Length: 172
Image (cartoon, rainbow, N blue to C red; front, side, top):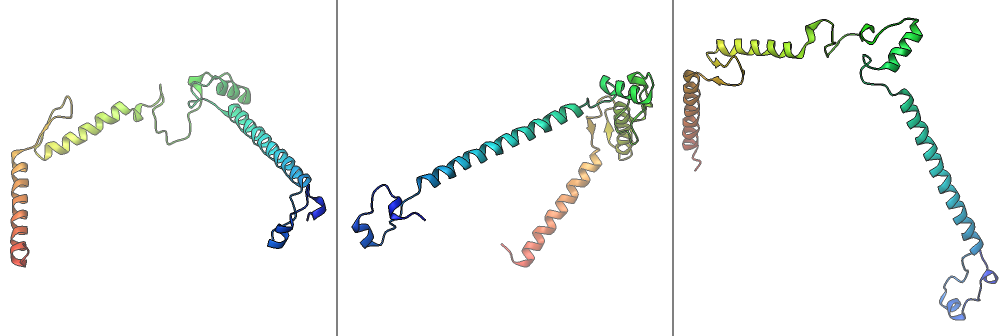
């Protein structure tokens, strides 16, 4: 700890009588601390920058197109590693399950055909219930009057029961 002799000027006698701290701050110690703080900050920032640059470089090196069917780099690498001369269309398919259709392959997972099958199944269910379906748009339909009447009767009966229950229980 600094002594009175390390100060630029001696403490006042009033300060000593009041019991104040009479030692001063060491300028040399403060300067060393600030230099160490700046050097540590610079090293941390430099290390972070180098680490981020290395990660970005690694990701750019490993980055490929989302489809192996159109990635020339992948096709070239496949040909070199397997000693073949495969075109993008001749690449082996990814392992199942194949959730999206592959052009030129089995049409079982064709979204348009799947949608058409779904519409046919829905239309069959609604037709069995008596609904009238527009076969072209699959959006316009007619609800049978018997279904509407039944819903109205059920709702009226429910409201009547609730009103009777409220009267019987004495609720206002």
